[in-house]
Length: 495
Picture 1 (cartoon, rainbow, N blue to C red):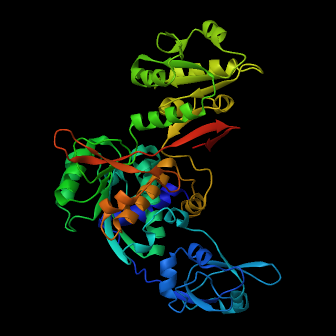
Picture 2 (picture 1 turned 45 degrees about the vertical axis):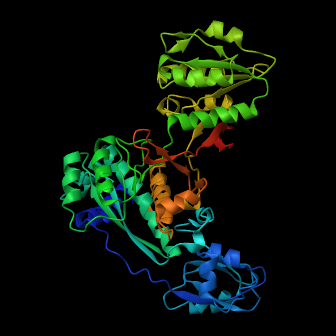
């Protein structure tokens, strides 16, 4: 089924029309398992999505002095879909039902177990949380999502017209994508005994509408809020969060309209990404000839590059959108590799330069292209990925584009479509926020203990920035990023 139809008529209309996703009974069920050779506490905890501490609490008869699992001992594990291996090596998938393991496959239950990681795998990110075993559990919270679902634009009488409306409206598609990613994170968190009630609210891209909805909400303030997706409603949402002293995550911006110490900005500032790329370039520099191509809108980046590489050759631009091909080609070195930094948000300039550089690659002339600011110009379909791959294009980013993971496979099965970057962001941001809020001393204490945390695609390491005028924190800003490079028609993580 098409993702948009399934989402809107299956999830969104129900949740938004009620204004509250009704809480389900998430009481976990368990079954007994006899330990086999090769089993370990670590593997059992990972496979069943629980912590080592939870495994010990489920099985108080286990030794507190040793991490070994004695072969033959019976332990209690949470019920979920498992894959059992028969003695003849034929694999049989079975569902551990509320009544226990399928009686027709009782014999297989005595053999080693491999858990199907689907549908919602988030075990590996848990390993990055240093206080995972001390989280408040069970932990319950309400999380508001203020997004432009635009139900005011929907035709409820004709599903076909409604479907076409969703397909035509970018705001609807972005909101549905982000929200469904968040819902998958909420499902994953249940494995840890963390139960989140989502409260979607339709901003309708109108600050007045959002203000009225927030202040007339009979449910009262949530424990935290995520949104919006456009700058127009940021002030209203931050004012609301500040009024109730709750965390607010703004998922698509790097700064807000005013200071609020519990505001979180997952998108790093340009200066953070620039410093990351230049630090990487400085560490890996081996005497290459450096070129700088920067338009008049990127003088700050150009100055930063010149500080690191003072002998960089500055390429003169034609009308701020291209370079003189013949003059530039004569400057390329055929003995040592050439590094070319391209700093621009102009698609014409980026497209022109990448084509010219690619055309000048020969057996002797080696060229590698960099940028300190990966913007829409570099991501446009006009830019040939073959050119970027040939140029080993290297850039900083706080998210990497997932090819395939347990998360993407689960999302495809559930919604019939591969998740886009904003959908993955919904999962990652929700997972990060909720885990930190479940810290016994609250989110700010959790944040103080955290180093870089990498979920499906995004990496977070928040640091507070203090206002010189008030000496108070203006919010938490993401200081973490990746270095990615194009190689063999793929984008690979290099740092």
